[in-house]
Image (cartoon, rainbow, N blue to C red; front, side, top):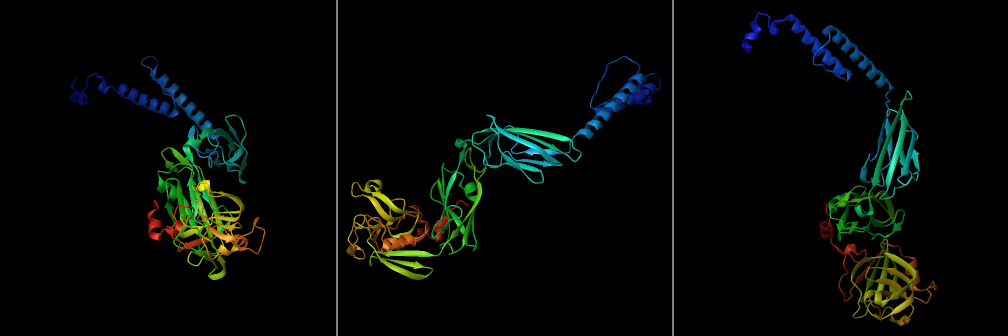
Length: 431
């Protein structure tokens, strides 16, 4: 028979057999019911068609009933474990955290691969749990959490993950420390333990704000050093807040940050001291008023003192100064230099000097590049200029040297950031 003839065939062909039509519909209905019930069994031939249809219908109903019963026994509590199962390079800050919706947590157990238990705390509403401390790097952890819904139906979830390794992570060591009070010249400075190639992502992850609304911009001195400062010195008596969101930030290919914290520090009074090599004096100005003028002895040729703006970075009541550490051979080795305040990484200090006669201060340059102030051996004489200056100075206070025959100090030598113009400073930002 031709296909076009099938619709008009009035003989005994299957196309017009009513029994054939009914059987096909029942078969389709039966298959649909079985698919809905989650199991389908097809036979090629044999058996009574009406009997097979009834049996299939019963199986479908039984399957539907079983599915409904299983649904009733399923807990509504949905547990999430961060970062998930079988994850690597996991955060040491946020990994291991557990949350639940549609129920409350009953218990959470977290252990290292070696079996060491990790202490954690559950939220008061029992919908969250997290470790009490930062996790270790290069460590495999397992978390097992149990929760229940309002009908006391239980749900269990577990996850195993491995935290990021030291080789695949970087840390930014920063200054100033949280809670400190510093002078108006102290920049926010980060030194990273690995070279950063994705500078934009790293700089974006660090936000520096002030209570007075000063604009603060970052500047990259190298692949490992990033400083932040405003155009002018920090406003006296203000607060600076640094939000560090480096956790998970890819600073270089396959190397991720691990830090997530917020720190803040106070800015003290504005104190700027200016050492003038023409007058051999240092004028100390605090909050716009001159509070003392001190006779000094600066660097003598060929070891003159840098010009420019320098910032106090370290203070020592007594320290050893050896010329070999700054490339000056065996010129000196003084084991007990009193009241020493570092200005540059290369070795410029403001410090007490007891080995020169009092007459040189204010008249003659005698140092190897430092700013020398009269002092006594041991530094215990409270009447000396060095004693007073040391005890009236904060880390972050500014010292300006002018009229020295030397060059201007490099901006990255210590915290000499302020020697860059605002335009040049902003040009060093990756944003």
